[in-house]
Image (tube, rainbow, N blue to C red):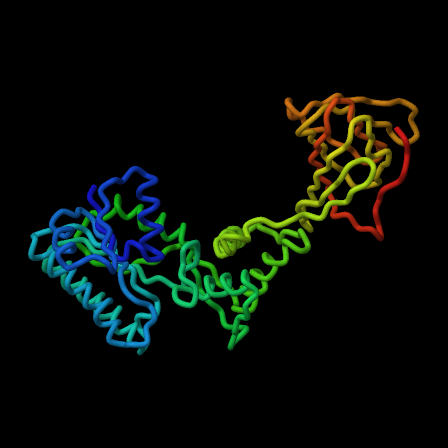
Length: 369
């Protein structure tokens, strides 16, 4: 299928084009700000489907709305009709279409043009009225409040909230892309209809800002906020996409002693914490037990003996593990445990504990295995 995307390098267009290519679509006509009207004339002769995303959301010159929004729509339908092309059109409109702004007026006029085109050209048209969108590649201070908050917070810049309790309705870009690409298969008639992306999220501006600030603090506290909800996972993915290119990495704090070193990696209020250690040859770690805290040990380099002894019972249990054969060893509550480097090289171990370490309530009691 030959697919025309207007606004192909914008937020929507770039994401849709990328996923179409992932799915094997090769003939994509990308109409951008650098394209000419001659390009559009050629594309409208050949295309079999149109994603019409081009336009402006914000501008200091209100005439831009007429030129880049309704004006381009007018050119698009005129050329399709001139070329006798009945390709279906999917148009990205806005839930703001009924307000009195110049932007809304341009969207209303575009919708009217597409309604007329559907009747005249006997072409299928889907008009999606979208709320605020968020996700990777969105332009801050332009496309979305989410992108603006993520961009500024990631860089330590202030954000401005005029109404903390104001609720915003959001669509995540991956949900929008999935909905739009499915339209390639289900447009079957010539009716012009309005549609929405079913999966939406609603959140106050203050709660939105608080969530993003928690993501930023993760590097300092190592505490990862809950990602149990689809919205939180989508928002975290969006936030990370706005980190500056030279700031993707960050240092962990190493605790070093005669045994080697240990560093906490990530913590969660609901899932405990991960940490990693390097242990020298012949060195033993542990020799303690817990009432409630449980752990998992995973040796990723070297050889080790992990020993256990149930409190009150004079009998040891041993597990020999090697990094080349990943094997997770559970540490039950009520068992003293230790891990000893028995190899010729350093021992690297990844640990998980069911609770974040609390120095005031360690639940850790010395007992040699």
